[in-house]
Length: 489
Image 1: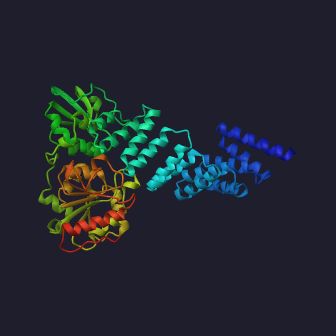
Image 2: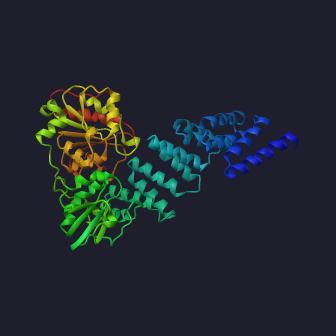
Image 3: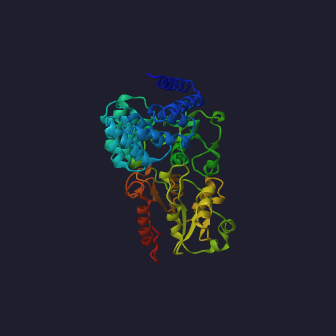
C-alpha cells in the first residue's frame, strides 16, 4: 500500500471511530479529507453521505450518494443506503425504484422487500404491498413486524381470514405483543367472532392503567363506577351508547372526559357526572369506555337500538339566526353539513375539499362547513370563499357546539368518523365516506347496525375518493330528485 492509500485508509478508520463516538462533525471532516485524496472512492463517498444525513444536512448528502452509484453502480451497500435515504425523506416512488435496483443485486434482502411493502401500503397499493411482504417472509428471518404489516395489508384488502392468519403467526413468535393482539381483536369482530374478539380486545396496548378495582359488568348498587376515556374522541362517543345500560346495573356513573367532550357528556342519559382528573374522583370501580361492549356481552343481536343517546338542546330561533345569518335561517333548501378531514393527521382519512365544495355548485342545497378549527377556514379561503358555503365550524369551541349544528342539518356528509359517531348518536341522517379499510363498527354492508340513520360509502379501490363521490352524486339525485347534482370529478 502506497503512502496516499495508507493515509486514506487511516482517515476512513478515524472517521468511523469519530462517528461511533458521536462526533459527526469530526467524522464528516475526516471523510471529506479522504475524498480530497481519493475523489472517486466509493467507501468515502458512502461514509460521508451517511454522516451528513445523520447531521440532518439532507441537501448536501444526496450528491455523494449519487457519485457513489455513478462510480460503483454494482455496489449493494450504495444502492441500499440510497434507498434508505429516499425512503426516510418521503420520496416514495423514487425509494421504490431504489429498493428495486438494490434487490436486483441481492434478491434475498428481506428488509428491502419489507420496506417496499410499507411504501406500497402508504401509497394504498395494497396488492403490491401484500406481494412484497410475502417476498420478505420467504427471504427468511420471519419477524413480528413483517407479519403485522402483512396482516394490516390483508385487512385493508378485505381478506380477514388471511389477516387473522398473519396475526396468529406473529403471536406464535411473540405471544405478548399487545399491538398485534389489538389488531387481532378487530379482525375477529369483523369476522363476527364477537365474544372471542372482545376477550382479545382487553389485552390492547392502549388500555389505560386502572387505579381502582376493575368493573367486570356485574351489578354495582350503592357504589360509584368511573368510566375512563381511551383512544380518540369517536371511540368514546361510540361507547357512550351503553351509558344507560350501565346505569341500570347500579349506583352512580362518572365519566372521565377531555374539555372538548365535557359539555356534550352533560347531556348523555345514564351519566351522573363528568370528571377531568380520574385520580381525584370519588369512585369505587373503574372500567375503560371502549371495554363496555365486551363487559356487557354485546353481540349483533343485542346492539342497543334505543335511538339517539344525547339530548342536546337545539338552537333557539335567535341563536339560529346569529349562527346562520338572517338569510340562512330562513333558507328553505335542504341543509347539508360537510366535513372533509379527520381530526388526526392521516392523509388516508382526508379527501380533497373540492370534492365536498362541489356539492354547492348547482345551488340546490344550502351547504355548511362543519370542519372544526383553522383547517376549515384555510381550505375555504384557498377555494375562494364566495359565500355559497357557510362556515359554521369556525365558531365551534367543542363537541357540544358541533352537536347543536349537526341537529340543524338535513344531511351530514363526512369523512371524519368522530363526527359520524356524534351525528349517528344524535340520530341525524349521515353519509359516511370511508377509506377501503375502516373502523370495525363500519366494516360491513351499506349501513351500520350501530347507527341506523347512517349510510356508508366505501372506496371501491384504496385511495379512490372520486369513485366515492360519484356514488354520492347518484344517491343525492335519488334522495333529492328535483334537479341534479354532479360534483366536478
